[in-house]
Picture (spheres, rainbow, N blue to C red):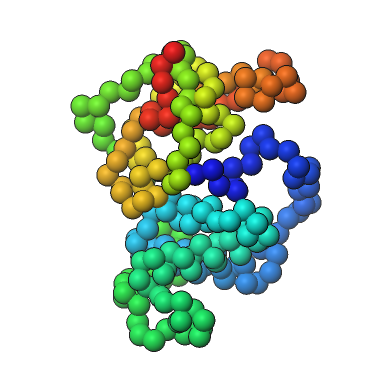
Length: 220
């Protein structure tokens, strides 16, 4: 989707001001927000793509007014409600009326580190599928304007580039965000001349690489 999170190449937001020795959390509630999000995600009711889309699928005014972990909390509330694990009335009251579905699938503290180390592999067996493009092929990204999730940034649509690497066969995030983990496609690294993406303001000779799934690309 053309959500408020897709800021690449956009002006007007001012310079990035990184904090020196930035702490992991700026307030105790942020640590708790991360913990609750991980614990809820361990139920396995949604994918990382659905979780990401829940954070990005917001009105721009709300998105840009929320802090990083406030966005996480709003997204978690939406996911819990969507999957029938909590109601708005329970959230408003601050306590549950009854044990939530999947309440027995708790994540114990000693399970957190192994779970995070294990991750959630997104590669899939390609079977008889073969990549449509090889390294060195020239391609053009499609002008996709979906209402749902997409991992092709707006600044890189309808642009020509070159296949730099074939990264394997992976879960397609656009479908995964809708709850379908069975759809997979070939993933490529595509190299673009920076001036093709950002005009002559970009430095001549610079190259920008993005990872793009096969449905995002046409051969030139």
